[in-house]
Amino acid sequence: MSIDDKQKKSAKEFWDLANSFHENKDYKSAIENYTKAIDINTNDPLLYLYRGQSKFKLKDYLGALSDYSKANELEPEDEYINESIGFVYSEMKDHKKAIQAFTTCIETNLCPSFSLYLHRAIQKRELNDYEGEIEDLTKAIKSLDEDDYILKTRLFKQRGKAREKLGDIKGSIDDFKKEKESSEKSTEESLNHWYD
Picture 1 (cartoon, rainbow, N blue to C red):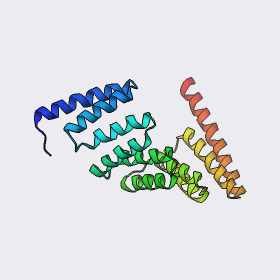
Picture 2 (picture 1 turned 180 degrees about the vertical axis):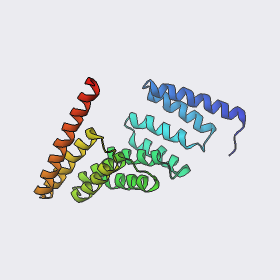
Picture 3 (picture 1 turned 60 degrees about the vertical axis):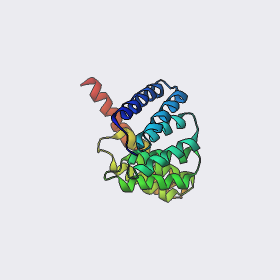
């Protein structure tokens, strides 16, 4: 359905109002106004995505999933929509579907970020798939900048724990050493930044 300029303006006014309510943590009012905008413009994936975010904040995970799914139907290769679907499945403790959503996000993104691998690794850990967790943590580490020591510290620690669960003591010790080295470099970098 095509909408005219007057309807576009009206939908934009509801959108702006809804965003304001969302920013002020009045999620129920945000949902009401996103819904009014959707009633005017049913083909805008951002309206469904943002209404889903408000529902997510209210822990209405089924409602959020419904909106994210509609947004995904309208814009199937949007990384942020797929990532949001992964988060809602994670909150619903449906780790397999969360993994599927994060995998879709990784596969459709030309430059997957460390966070996508990290979120997928967390879901694999919840399913006791420590080999899969290690694989994704390794990809997360490789995707970081060389000098991103703070994040690397945390990732090496988690990968060391996963290796320990698999009985890979040598690999675990190696990762804990890397964690310590990254932590020391992070501290040194912080001190140099503040005292140079």
